[in-house]
Amino acid sequence: MDPTPTLTSTSTLPGPVILLAPTETFLPLETATSTPLPTPTSTPLPAELTLDPADWHHWPVIPIVSEKMREVYQQGQMRGNDAHVFSVIGDCQSEPNVFLGLYDTDPLAVAALPENLQETVAWFAGSFDRDGPTIRPGTTAAAVLWAAWHQNRYTCTPYETPLACELRLHRPSFMFIHVGTHYELRNEVYIRRIIDQLLAAGVVPILASKADNRELDERVNHAYAALAVEYGLPFWNFWAAVEDLPNRGLYTRPEVSYQGDVYLTPEAAAVHRLSALQALDAVWRAVREP
Image (cartoon, rainbow, N blue to C red; front, side):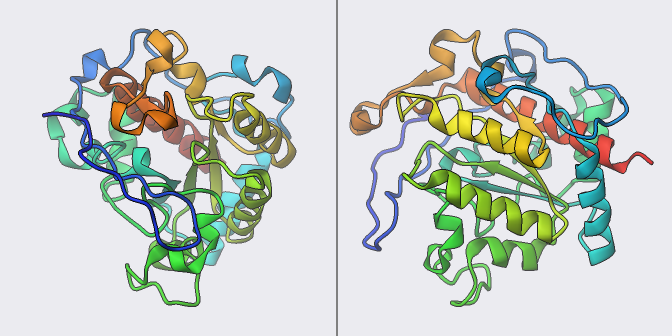
């Protein structure tokens, strides 16, 4: 199947550019990464993150989970959040058919996973292949705070943001924040607002670095690392997961060459899925422990 999209479109609304999502071909699990990622082990949770945001390139792929996140999770359970549910904020590379949907739709791929990851897939069954108002091509941090972005779909009301709608509909206990390729001048301001809303709702945010450097100075990933330290958030370092791949697993599509190297090769997409699942596994197990 040709993974290249056939067209792009631009929104007529005063918001970000919308890029139609590609259709990807999943690789067999054994080719998902050139270097096997470590299986996380249970350790006492630190009170805070002591990592240096300036050194984010060398942070581990799998998040370090702070004690604060265990407290957020417990608060969320008391508020009625579903322990079996996670959500995703992301653009076209976060849509279920190119990201985590495989784990709900391909039993053979799940059976090939290590036992701990199979348990995690079973625990969160139904969340992997779920679409929602916070996933859409071209999504930015500001977009999920803009009521018009959900287009009144998913039973969202015209008066609630995509983020508020997702929290109401899905009641997640965890939320991947996986935006930044379509960055904005006030990107950090919007990400901070998202984090504050999630923490207030008892949802554990999982911040993700991105593989591309479209902004040319890596300020998006650096800002996310700084926010992870400030708030004590889990940081899934996807950038580090693909650093050994040619060009970090990125390529430019000729029909949208102005975007540069922002699209994932099939090999990088497989690393994307697997490392995200490992990150979810690590965070989920850490916060649930007494």
